[in-house]
Image 1 (cartoon, rainbow, N blue to C red):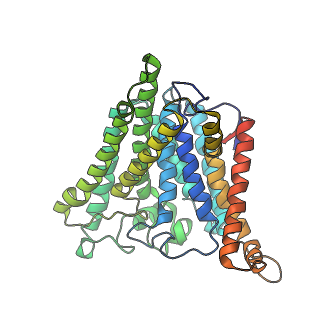
Image 2: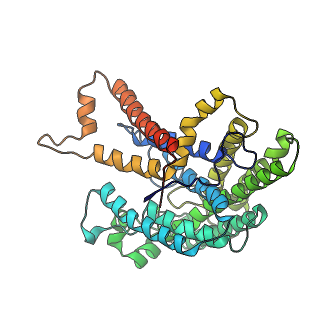
Image 3: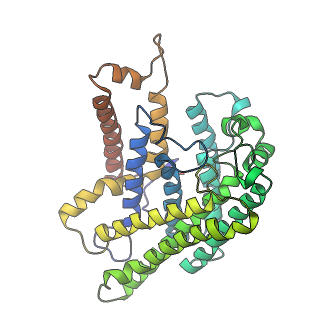
Length: 391
């Protein structure tokens, strides 16, 4: 990653009428959740990633990141697609993904290098969304693309599920296991293929594109609001501004319902709402949550000029959002290092920290506060100096 001193189009200067702080505010909220989750010293089973079917709280974090990234790409790519910088970005993200996987697994053995992963998935989503901006650059076109990706991914799962017992997708019967292990080799995918699926593999990529394209749809809706606000002499009623986003959020929820309860019926297969296979109903539900966050961010930060107190209150979240890639993946890496056992006692820094405090609850509060506070302070410092790390 290289430091960049140029601001993204999605973030406003205070008082501007054609740019938004809402996106970075929403990213900041997501990052507070992400850092807090990563800091947990004791992860309850109901909170951790769902083993297979269903959705647990931690399953929301990365899909929210992808959806909001799609929104940001709508702003960035509206000015045109630059192919060489795009190629460089893909290569950098893919290489960093291998290094990230090595740190997270604490292994540098090439025989077990995982070729798939969150950064690699992101590395494929970015050019996918970028190149599709050569096809359409408006919200209506991106809504159509969201439907196409949702139906395509659902169809793949439903056709595969029709060969499963009782029409239920399982770890032993799903398209990810055979496809991803065939392409990458069993030793180079999630859990070395032992769990029968890859939550960041090629099959899941199609589901992640549902999230990213839904985000791009909302990004273009926000661009339309910005254009209208610049052209109008007076501020439009609040409902006039947020209505398109509310309607698209309702549409995404309705489409998720249709896929589960109508489209899946002829196949005789249950289409689950789950993160492990990043199903379209799951992605569309996350998109609706992202829209609610963006609406809240718009009303708090962009609807009217902020007072000095309001600007100071939103500054930490916006600062986090401006360096979302650094904070999101950096917090994962730091937590992994702090959790790694070392020394003669075989204890990690986190475990040694807990041992010296009177209660687990106090230790967790102090640990989370220190990590979250550290990332917030770093993000604010970088934002003040207009330094943003991008691939």
